[in-house]
Length: 435
Image (tube, rainbow, N blue to C red; front, side):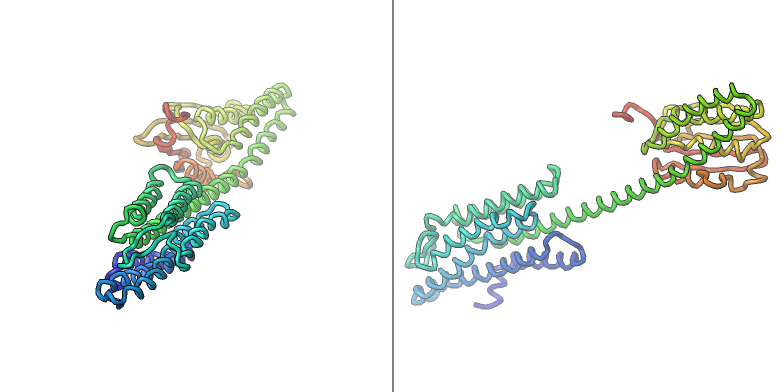
C-alpha cells in the first residue's frame, strides 16, 4: 500500500472533493446553509475512500500472495463493513441541511441507525449482509440491499425537502432530479448488478459538489431577492414620506379661499364648499394609492383645484387644455402641484393664462404646464413652494420612483414651462394594462 496507489485509485473522487473544498473556501464569508455539514460529509467520504482502498488491497492480496488469503479475508470484512455503515450517513447529512422541521431530526436518523445495526452483525461473523468465499470473492447476503434502500430513502427525502424548502420551479428542480438519478444509477450498479468496478465514491463526491453548488445558487438568489425587497421597501417608504408632505398645504390654501368668499359672497362660498368636498374626496383617494393612475383622473383633480382658485381670481385666470393624448398612466398628485405652482409662482396675483397640453414624443409621453407670467423669473428662481409645499424635487423624485419619469423646468421672462416626460412602455394604456 502507498499514497500514490491510493491517489491513483481515488483520483476522480479526490479531484472532485478538492474542487468542493476550493469552492467552500471562496464562499467562506457567505452564509451558505450548513457549510459545516458539508465539511463533515467530505471527511466521511475521505474515510470511505480509505476504507475502500484498504478493502481492495486485501482483495488483490489474495491474488498476489495466496498464503495470505485467510488474513486478507479477515481484514477485508472489517473495512468493507465500515464502508457500508458510513455511506448512508453522507446523504443523511445533506438531508439534515434542509430539514424543514428539526423535530423530525431523530426520525430521519433512524434508517441509518438500522443500517448500522444490520451491517454490524458482520463483525460477529454473520453472513446476513454480505460474505466472502474461501477465495476472497464477495457475495451479497439476504439483507445486503439494506444500504441501498436506506440511501434511496434519504435521496427521496432530499428531493422532497429541497422542493419544499426552496419552492423551485420545474427548470430549477432539474438539479435535484439529476442528483437523484446519478445516485440511484450508482447504487443499482454496485448493490443490485454488482459491477466489477466501483464508482459509488466518485458519484457521491460529484453529487455533494452539485448539491453544494445548488445551495450556493439558491442562497445567492435569496440574497438578491432580499436586497431587491429592501430596495422596494425603501422606495415605498420614501414615496410615502414625499406624499405625506402634500396634504397640509392643499387644505390650508383652499380653506383660505373659502374663508375669503364667506365674507363677500355666501352663495358662491357654498358652491365652492361643494367643489372642495369633491376635491377632498378625490385628493385623499389619490393619496391612498401607491400605483399609477389614469391621467384623466389626475387631470380631473387638477381641474377641481383650478375651479376653486378661479373663484378667487375670477377673470384674471384663463385656462386652456390642449389634450392630444390621454390614454396613459401617471403617478397620483403629479399634475396638480405643478398647476398650483403655475398659479402661485407663475402668474401670481396679477393673473394670466395657464395651459395644460399633452402629446407624444418618440418613446415618451409629454405633459406640459405653461404659464405666461414672469413672476417665477423675477421673484422665485427656484420655482418652489414655501413652507410645507411639495416642491419640484418632491414631484421629480416621485416620478422617478414610480415610473422612471422625468420633470424639467424652464423659466423665462415670458413664463414658465414644467414638462413631465413619461416612458411610453411603462405608462401607455393598452389591452394588457389591466390584465
